[in-house]
Length: 98
Image 1 (spheres, rainbow, N blue to C red):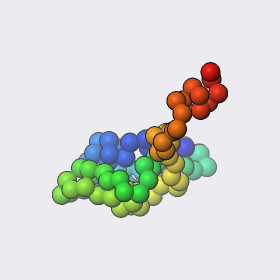
Image 2: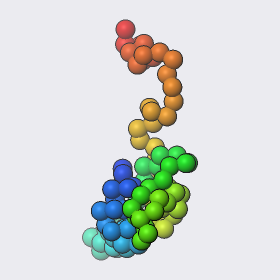
Image 3: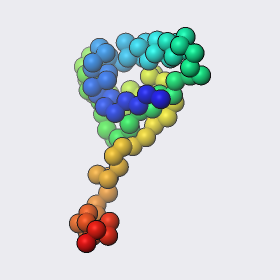
Image 4: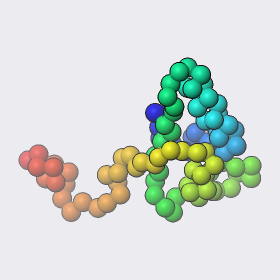
């Protein structure tokens, strides 16, 4: 399994969505050549409404959904998820660590 934590950094680091998709395809091929049963690709997804920047030819913002689809991920996850909700209590109290 390969998990991509930061889609912005991944796409920018490889020069855009097309080169990133080609790199992931090559990685799958190399895994198969090495005798592995496959490669599971997972992306950390921030939820709807977030954009990624600098991963397309025009350097404009692209929705996460539009960026993820051509990369061929097998699954999406959300890590960490703790910033997605408001706690009514401090962490120590919410976790029972008092």
